[in-house]
Image (cartoon, rainbow, N blue to C red; front, side, top):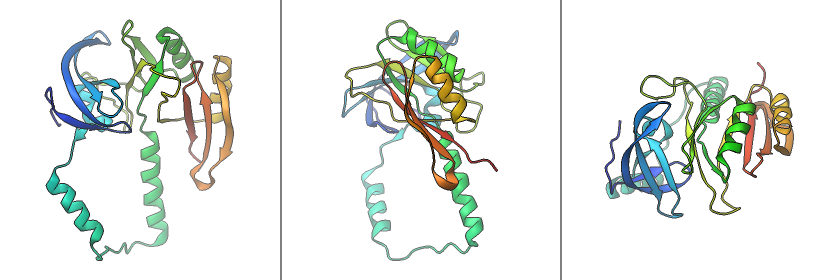
Length: 225
């Protein structure tokens, strides 16, 4: 597992390059947990990531100049590896990769009222949301082990942070077993449907909703086998 120290640069999925501005101990779930405090260089947004979850959320080193050169060499190469699998095996492999990707949930929700957010997400998705006073909150979307690492493959727990502007929107999706039931629960809890359930062909169904504070989030339902 990659270890970062204060001053290091790291890539945080969706947001880009961040600087590690502090490594602190916070109480999460009643346990003292070491966390990285990251500052996104482009936006100034601060994000807190438990060090034990760093690899799971995709936090990684910035690639070196040598690696950049290697990437460009590969892109310029005319030698392309051929996939000799039959089309149906190749299709199934790609679909499995898409399902695994869609299960990854990278929570970085914005909120001005963490108690309201806690009530909504616990009611609709059965997440456990732990408040951190006025600093934010931690959303447990899946069970964790003794080291606070998600047990479910592809599961990522994340946080709620103060909204800086009305355009400050999250970028992630939530997989659900039934979009119809989830949309009903969302409306009952004070959210609203932005884009109704619609087919995306063999990949299943999607919909968009807004929570009570205006965060617009994607729902995805796998196709029935």
